[in-house]
Length: 350
Image (cartoon, rainbow, N blue to C red):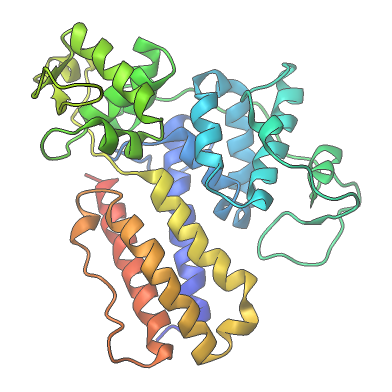
């Protein structure tokens, strides 16, 4: 039977595996089975690679390699929006990646707005980039990462990455961007292509796709005017209305199966917060009472975020912490995450 440390390590490994398969689907130079069906969110995946991905040096550098050849596929405004949910220490990792890849690609910026939005670290304040963190200094620290407060050697970038397979339904977001351009219109369309139940209003869509409600409304008006999307409640004022994709014609034109929506931005964020809380508060977790209290607080904030990230996870039973000792709070939280990951892994194989 696994102890708590082993369960946290296994949770990390399974999350890395999800990310590995998604990067493989996007064209990164990795081996294994690519993700399918569940729609990949490239901005959320890149941000997760800058957090949980620091446990795997190969994955991290292959993601940088991919970014060097495919940065034009990313939405800069959406990347900044996804990044903003994370602590500044994690934002600095993304800023370092963005600056390094920009220099590598010989362009001013590969993801506009990232560096200008991130606060620089105090002078001479550095930490080891890779996780689990240790006190170490590379013989030749990379200057760009060091300037953002992180120590690592030179990234291993070999220009081996390819391009996404746009016939893979998991890449529907990038397929839509290839057809309609980067921005809210393409990403809203990709979301509506997915197999969620019923029609959606602008507020619910904006929360899922990480654009503000006005941008989503403008995108929906454009898509409705072109006949791709239909408004089931026309005539309302402002952002009123419930929208859905109009028939299956668009999916046929894309030549893909119907994908499944997963709000990876929220799911990856929630998993990272659980892992980071234990990593950053190891002393508290050595105490059943203090560790249990931290797990109880995380249960209240992160569990609902995970359950709302896709239809399947909405059915995952809530952790039962009623009338139980604090020690059991951690068990219940980890049990919930393990079940959520199992369901998510199934979605990527369908």
